[in-house]
Amino acid sequence: MLSSDLDSAELSRLAARIIEWGRALGFAEIGISDTGLSDEEARLVAWLAAGRHGEMDYMARHGARRARPAELVPGTLRVISARLDYLPQHATEPDRILGNSRKAYVSRYALGRDYHRVLRSKLQALVDRIAVHAREFRYRVFTDSAPVLEVALAAKAGLGWRGKHTLLLTRDAGSFFFLGEIYTDLPLPPTTATSAHCGTCEACIDACPTGAIVAPYELDARRCISYLTIELKTDIPEPLRPLIGNRVYGCDDCQLACPWNKYAHVSGEADFAVRNGLDGADLTALFAWSENDFLSRMEGSAIRRIGYERWLRNLAVGLGNADYADDIVAALASRHDDPSAMVREHVAWALREQERKRSRFSGSADSSTRSEASPRAPAREQSRP
Image 1 (spheres, rainbow, N blue to C red):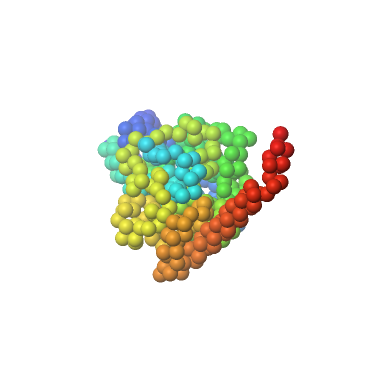
Image 2: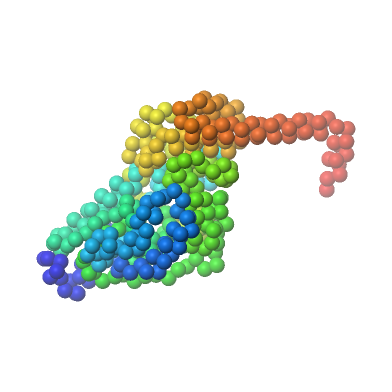
């Protein structure tokens, strides 16, 4: 049947089927929204005017078009939003990695296969199912690959609400999921939006290591660790380097702190299973990879897109932030003359940080030795309650 021949009852039945088909394809949830985003457009324009997008020029290049789906894809009447959970099975607990300065923390979404490919394939499969029942309809599939306000659209479609960390939240599954969209000219009935449930909680704001969540629902990307380690193509600002810790690709702290993520679902997608031991790899081991190692091992991974140079930059920062160790200094020293000026600069900074820690450690040890040798030490010991 041609899409133009569908009446309201048939469109309602099709919408219900789309939700069923989506779940059968592995999506956790499907919702449908109209294209009205005027409030979000004002918010976006103000965010761009404040320069909070940093070096992400593509955000400004498309400007308000992000909030106007019908301008991006002419004829768009509805947006089908899909949620796909991504927490990998059997991954090492984040706290165990974040609490060990020798380990490299990689954002949970990037531990397995590149989500763009997985999500796009599922969305296309859903479109193919729709096409059987509504021929000659127009559509376009998006997976974080075009100017789309996916959180705003998903919230309108009832998949959740925008949390204070600016990510989408749902009471049933927290926020550890991907979003994808199908823009279409099918006048499907929208699903019902849900209410927000953050209340007075500001755990995500308090947890952000760099203070990037400058106010509820306001993110300054220039301070966000995900931006600094993934989007930023130049030197990481030196004042922010110590705050990054061992997070070498992305950051999950705001999500890990969110109470709603106690309900987060582990994904059943085999493609999201941990690859290359990235859920607990040692910083020095990753830093020893050659460029060929990086390219081959990161084949099919979202991490590959930052390139080898930025990968080494991020690892150098992590090594600089690690507790002092001779093998860490040796690993850094092995790249002090790296061909990349950016890598050399971050390695030099990391070596200074390691030297500072070594000096502090030595000073503490010397002080402890003098204290133990002092005749007054026993008296201090006896004075303790």
